[in-house]
Length: 343
Ligand code: 3MF
Ligand code: MG
Image (tube, rainbow, N blue to C red; front, side, top):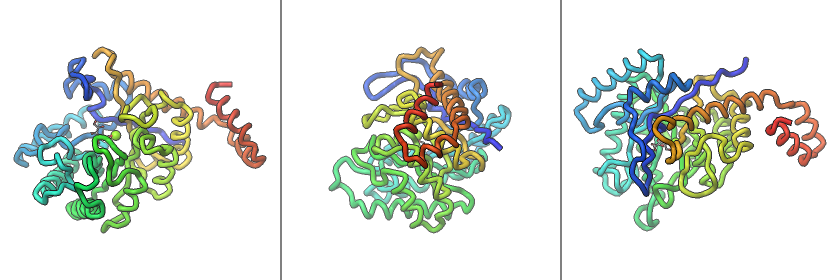
């Protein structure tokens, strides 16, 4: 049976266009308006930071609990589901020097306590997936921290969360740089290595973002295959990236259609989505879009994914195998390109 893909994105993917060099260029949609877009655009999974669910992640628990319950009702009413919660550990004054790997024990404690609350929030909105994007776990200068000690701190954080809730799974979303000069756990492979050092490796996996793999000089489809092989690909952030520069979060397939095709092919071939995994997007609208048309990057990414699924399914695999057997990869190259351009 062919996989019926389900799609997700985070509310931050509908945004005001502010960047590091300029202010917002369009007004923010309200959260309720954003939720309406999920239905309009054909998405049913919602990805959250902890403070997308609650107004203040430092507020008394009773307040956070009520807000999380209210949000769950809003999702239920609209037939939406929460895919994951990611503690936003990179904006708070206590995480300036990193969260899990801050040099101050007090700051590391803050990060851990906040992450435990993120799990409690996840339980209230009905998901077992916790995403770690270790944005500030790295250095600006290498001498400021001990890299081996940092890895141990990350494993300690993972273990503490696995113990806090025996049901949750932790998905690492790795990125080699930005905002840090260099990250401590730059790729999926690095994180999977750490997963096996934890108390419960079966509950530690990954979310792979296409752009992050490209920034690391890696092929996103191969990264996905690496995680799929280990049974650890539990979410994706599909997007595109024009070479190693700042994280662009371009619409899926918009830079390199063939690279996108190969991501879809590896997902499709290895059963991604059959255990409820979402096809997640992490895409930004161009700053030049006006508010009224600032969700087209989501529409486009989903449409390109679905078209590529069709192309994967209609590829003449027998012919592919013949060309492989003949070791005629030049012919295979043209065959794939002709398939992609519809010849
Ligand atoms: C990073 C992420 C998110 C970021 C988001 C906001 C789960 O690639 O996917 O973390 O917070 O991109 O900019
Ligand atoms: Mg991402």
